[in-house]
Length: 130
Image 1 (cartoon, rainbow, N blue to C red):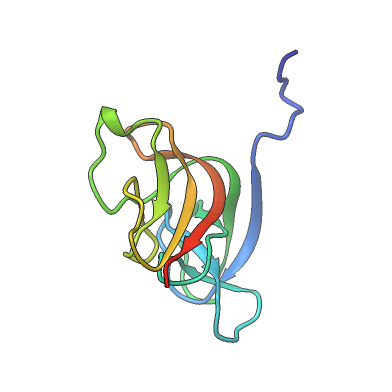
Image 2 (cartoon, rainbow, N blue to C red):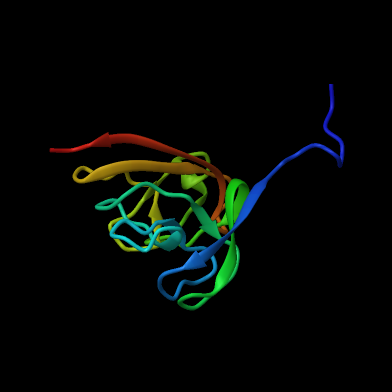
């Protein structure tokens, strides 16, 4: 059992932006109107779609990685002890953290693979605090 170059190891899609974003930002679907547009995600909003693989400005179309490994923008510094931890949406728009939120929505983005911020992307909604 092995993996060869023809196996799908990542999933990227093209999306149109509703605001300026940086490479590594976590994005979500725009909630209020603007069908089909994406904006920065945070734990007080809707779930994550994926991680921006390039910097873009409003109305520009960019690639968004939904599955695979990519370097995300963290709200804090990382250390070797963080590797392997779950990665969650932060309260800072577009950023992630290894600390699970204790309010609003808890959305797991994936797992930290390396101290450079590489995340194994596997988004999952966990809970919404009342």
